[in-house]
Image (cartoon, rainbow, N blue to C red):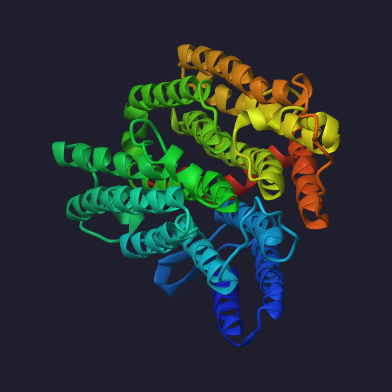
Length: 480
């Protein structure tokens, strides 16, 4: 059954929510275990069905190997979020860290937003697409504002709701115009019936604006820093990976399944958008003092690299983006795992608070350094290999100046990532600094993400497998 992974996630969400009503406070420690088991079973089902292709509900839901890669990324990011929040419920969080309240609602809402992301990549008509998008987005409004006693969290939730509603309104307006022009709800039919016209370009502009919010592209990035800072740190990690992946999946569906014939005409615009996004993200990250705001602007710059895969009518773009997403998944979650560890134990979020970490927790400092170097694109880590494939797409499109700009931005990013490395390895630790305990769950999370960050970059076969999946899905012929 091709919809079984999604049904498993939805069923797990309801089971977690129902058991929360009957469990005593001590028994609720089993809830993240149940949520994680559901995620792992769904992941196993996706891998089992991955070589197959199937259609459900008359073509409104399609399972293919390309969508399976996105689903694996969504599932892995959500599973990691569960692990990152584990200590706040089960472990011994210091007085500086805040405990997770209402765990049943927290994990069920997280699973519901995961199910929306999984439905999104399989959607093949406008109604299913938009409903899936809202299912993936609306629960995030609640998760961002989860810390009700924290003013920053309330402010972040309010800003995210207002701007999220605005972006959804802009997006659905663009989709409405596409429906009027294409005369159908089916994405492929719309793509076949479209022709360039003023209304077509208006719809495309509205869609780019709506997706730009989901991906935090400049100038639609204004929510990112405040939301990243105010949200619970595990949710910040989820936003930086899973939410961005969902935005990329939405952009893929609309650009390649609907707007396909005109994508090549937008090469210049997309190149400028990528340039502005990566440049502003890197430039503003340099002056940040809060680690979560710092990661927000780092995430913005990474979005600029990601959309380079949409440039040019070349089938290498999609596997390059998925490969970079896979590398970004491990790398970013590795950095956030260390941030969660430090915040749980000290409550500190300033970059200067990480000084001397290599003396008190050398392994965690090493993991953080490797993650930051991968984000900067240092070989042979996965971030470097991912950027190589994306830069190759832009080069093949003849945009060599964009490759040069992206390379300069990668160099600039190394400077501000080294700010954190400097604090950990060069600045002296506090006189009363002691070794901070690392829970087994968090240590395992750091180990797994560290392993992925290194292996994806040095082991051959990942990119080839992704490219074969893309070719098997026959996505490139759609709309052409």
